[in-house]
Image (cartoon, rainbow, N blue to C red; front, side, top):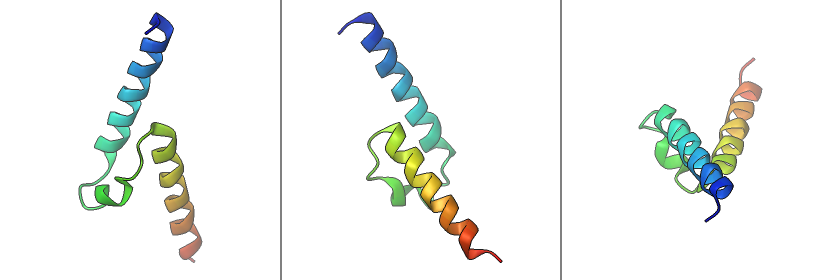
Length: 56
């Protein structure tokens, strides 16, 4: 693996860990299908937008 690829992989892994650790344990299972930071971030945004639409 090239050095730039390794740095990118390490950053992706760290970002994913930070996002998953920020999730409450009661809702973590709802996002277990997300295997990348981008997928998890998009799912969290979609959930947040859905919650915002539900509140008056």
